[in-house]
Image (tube, rainbow, N blue to C red; front, side, top):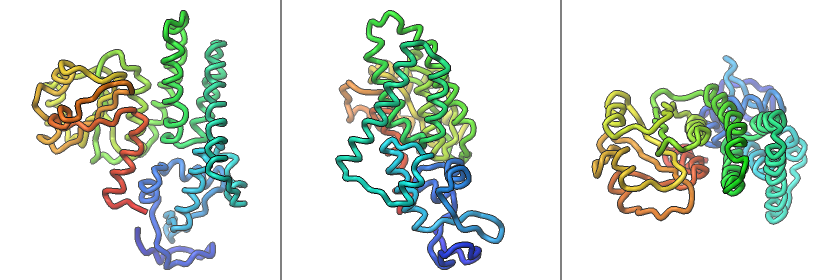
Length: 319
């Protein structure tokens, strides 16, 4: 944050207020710059000050407004319906908010599952595109994509049409996430490798991990298949990797970790990089064994946004 005296007087905000660039605001709020601009232009939610060269600057009041917007979005209110709620400063009790949130997100989940049952691909594509427009990725992953993954896991247990539904749904999810990943601005100095633990891990989950990293300006190298320890070592040496995200459906066995990371050898401290493991639920984790390998367990991939936000705050991007 900085003092920015060279701004216009198009609104009543003092030119001496503490201001943030759009990049700084994005790091604090986890809302990427593309989305912040859309909230300004398409929905009229933000009105940042401009410098004489046209650069946007945001104040503490703007930050508070974005936090209010995020609260409504977390409750399941679409972005297109947020403006009158924020303008009137409508508030509900915490219990009412939680109830409304659960109902709205559950409605979206039920709608998609109904469309899947009917094999209505047009309805599925339309709904996912609309959700992608209305909600930031972190909220969408927490409240929709990962609850959807759990619902599908239960649904597809001994389901006669499981493979058919997977073959229809997964390409839609992959296309949506790949498009988002391609358009997110990234910092080339912060390069991460995203790799599946096994070949059975759904590609859309790896794309989700990649997109969540990219939403925090991480440049992502995406692997379609697990690499051996020697291949991973080659990448660590050849590219200045900041971290490695391993994505799985279950906790890996010791032999699988040995294959990926090379026995007791720890790649992370050796290369001053991070190794994060997201494997889903229902696993017994030997934290000590993983710590010796330099691995941080994040469990559900849906916890990745909170971990990344914590890192931002730890690096000085606090409110």
